[in-house]
Image (cartoon, rainbow, N blue to C red; front, side, top):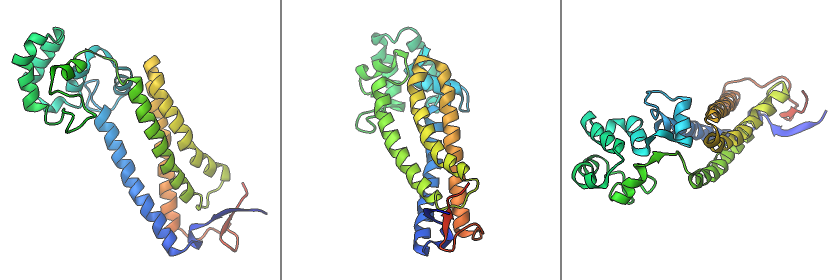
Length: 255
């Protein structure tokens, strides 16, 4: 009977288990913050107070019936303006965002409520509302994320998430799980889901239905992360030594 290189948690030095647990605790918190970020970024784009597939469709493919500014004001930025201010902006946008009304009517509203965040110095990733040229870019039809933006976000996403799941998967490899094929599936699912997740960002721009692939991929990724996190923490500190281990603590490579 051959053995895997992985040694069960109970046979690892205390310092290694503390290291693994510390990493998992930080990653667990980071994953929760990532879910909050997804919520803040996408929720409400369709006017509803919860995350829907339509929110993702608008994020990636745009909203052909509204401008980028109108989409934001109906969604995540809705609380930034009172009803009167929003109505003024909606009316202006509906008329085609004429420049002759900008300085007199629109710019004062933006200066009071929006420019504190929407300027290059404060946040270069947000639209710049300090000038007519910057506002004009979000007063046109909402076409969603541009391909250059998707490429920039994709390479960051692919590198960072792969790194995270490599570490979590390595820690999880020290767990005793049967059947063995299930353990291998749990380790591999996040990487496959990451590929389908990123691919669906681009595909959604071609057909809105691919927004469901974003949701499904995220669900599989989150499920695998939860299984690996809970199993690793439990077997490290609470579970008993499994009876199927070798005398040296190595996990037998059998189904």
